[in-house]
Image (cartoon, rainbow, N blue to C red; front, side, top):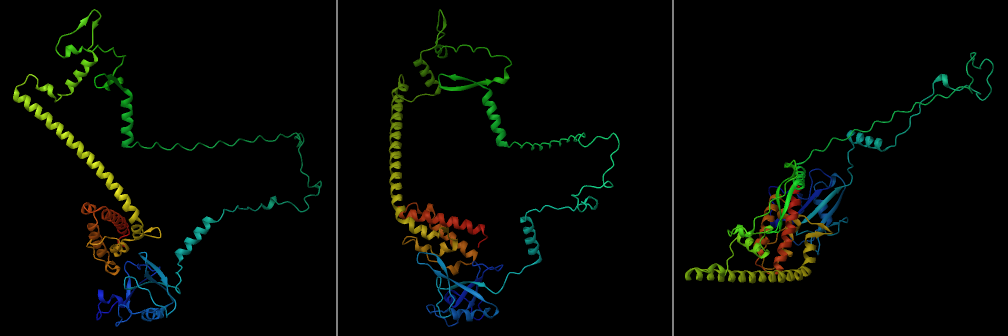
Amino acid sequence: MPSPTSPMDKTSMHRYCFYYLQGVNGESWASPNSFLISQDLQPNTRITFGTVKRSFPFENMGEYHWRFRETCKEGGFIWRDVMREEDEVPKFQGVVFAKILRLDKLPRVTATKIRVNMSAEKKAAPKQQRHYSQPQNSRPAPYSDLPPTHAQMPVVPEGAPTPSQRKAPTPTPAPAPAPPPAPPPKPETRIERLQRERKEREKNQEKVWDEVDQRWVVIGDKRARSISPKPAAAAPPVNDLLGGGPSTNSSGPTSAPPQQKETLGAKVKGIKLDASNAVGKSASVQQGVHQRIKDMEDAQAKAKQELIAREEGKKADALELDAVKVKLEPKLKAWCEEYGKKRQLRALLSSLDKVLWEGSGWKPINLGDILDARKARRAYLKASLKVHPDKTRNLDAEKRFIANRVFDALSQANATFEANGGV
């Protein structure tokens, strides 16, 4: 790190080499270390690998392999191995950035690691069958293939069955294995209980068809009736509902014609606003009704024209956005992705000026300025406000497409950045 007598600022960052050690706890490229290459180093001076190695404070403490970050022409960066001391060291955004791997330091093997490895090998090895030794008294005598002598022959009591007369013992069948216990029933969730109750209600509902509204109407629950329901009484004629008295004939009450039913439904549902409402009214009321009807018709025509204009505008915008997408999608994809993988937030912010339109007002940011997590969050907020859809809705189609694409890429990168704890 720089000494107190030579503080680091933006004008002197080219004099330092930023690095981190691979495979070491606490080391990451998000919070790199640094050492001074030369106090008199100019920004555009050629720096060799030997100069960097000789300036490294821990060069004599081990053997290292160096990789340097280099700016890629297509956007982003790549890592380049440098091994000869006379070769020039590449730079990334004006500074030397390296990752170092120590080659002479082997990983330390502890007793815990040995136990873990032994247990893993023991589990992976196949189980071997155990061979039990035969008891001393059951071992066969030597030359057992010779016929036994009289002294060796067993004594058979009188009346005992001969070996041919003996019956083989009946093998006892092994008991059948008990079936595994049934798993306990899974508790019913609240959503499943509500769905089951709804299906039961629909199954037990009693419905009738409403001729006026042309729909099914629920009139009761089948479970509430212990006997079959009585046939419903015939509906009163339409004339009775209108107050005209019942209309009967020799066969009984008659229903109103279909046209009269429709009129009744229209009257029940609401009052229709048309010229028929002005019949029998005063001249001022008739004039007000006609004016109201005219205003409603004009409003409906105007709303229809506005709807047609909006739909045509949407179609034109969609065609224009498709043309812009074909033109700009490769450039934006190369900016937000690297070898098929999403780039990180700091990389997107440091190269944002390469994809924004001219006159956007965005000032370029160096990667060294946003290595700190708080500065990276502050830069992300400024960038998201610059390309937010609410602030770019009045721009042309090309700028709107760039802003929306950049806003989505920054949002996804920021979510990954926060999930990794700002690394």
